[in-house]
Image (tube, one colour):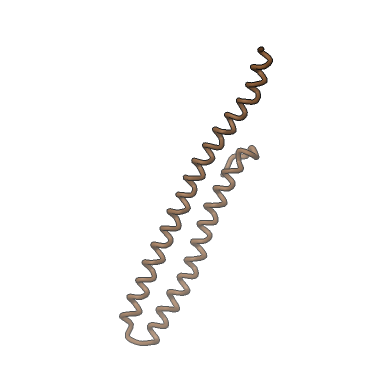
Length: 110
C-alpha cells in the first residue's frame, strides 16, 4: 500500500507542479502581451501627433517649396521613429523570450 502511495506521489506531484508552472507562465504571457500592446499604442499616438503637426505646418506653409520641405522632414523623421519603435518592441519581445526560457536553462533573466 505504501508503495502504491509513493508511486502515485511520484506521478501526481510532477503533474501538479507542471500545472502550476503553466498557470504562472500563462499569467506572465498575458502581462507581457499587455506591455507590448501598450507600447504599440504609445507609438501610434506619437506617430499620429507628429503627422498632425506636419499637416498643420504644411497647411500654413506659404510656398510649395516649404510644403515639400515639411513633407520631406516629416518622412525622414517618421522613418527614424519607425526604426526606433521597431527596435523597442523587438527588445521587449526578446526580453520576454529570454525570461520565458530562463527556468528551462537554469539561467536568471537579465
